[in-house]
Image 1 (cartoon, rainbow, N blue to C red):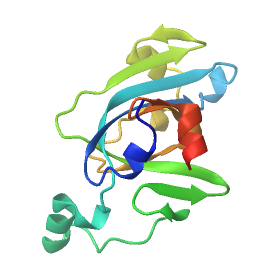
Image 2 (image 1 turned 135 degrees about the vertical axis):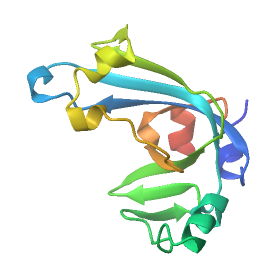
Image 3 (image 1 turned 180 degrees about the horizontal axis):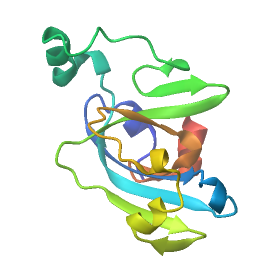
Length: 155
């Protein structure tokens, strides 16, 4: 079985990952349990400042220089961030990779539109063109074919 060491040594490689996040419902639906599960292929072990799109945007004056992390600190650069005794893994979406996303309201699968109807309008908006994101280790259900328990034990 592949363990989390594969992720931590995946310098620019593609890795499989699954994670489930709990979303905060709008006040009118505060008793609802909202979860979004995502499975896909991502790149790991990349320095954000070295991304071609970032270098191009800086050169074209479309963005400033890359800044330090807005929160937390690197625990194991460029893979793991630590913030308030919690660990997070940094992922980069693979270009043209399709993600499998499942939306759950009170543990029942629903469409994205139904799911979004339980969120505030600002939370329901799609995030566009993100080049990287972090996932709390507690939310990771599989990583490089490993389970959540193994991810936390390895860090």
